[in-house]
Image 1 (cartoon, rainbow, N blue to C red):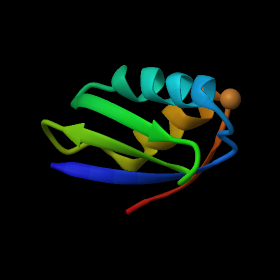
Image 2: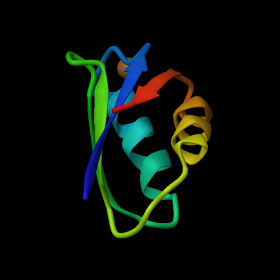
Image 3: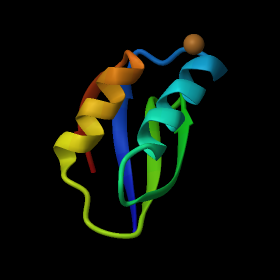
Image 4: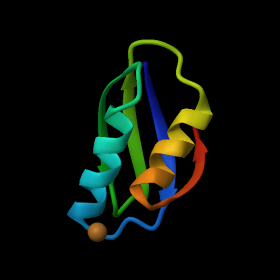
Length: 69
Ligand SMILES: [Cu+2]
């Protein structure tokens, strides 16, 4: 199962790395990719993860969580 997270504030590869690392700390996230050009991250999940977990991870990385689609 994959979900896309809309994020504001990433501007380069370092931002993508921070976001990826924080998202991959979440229990249930197998892997994450982040794209600063698109302003989004895609997470591969092994189980349901609450949207609030994604929000907390994105904010911990230092960016603005918009929504999960
Ligand atoms: Cu950056």
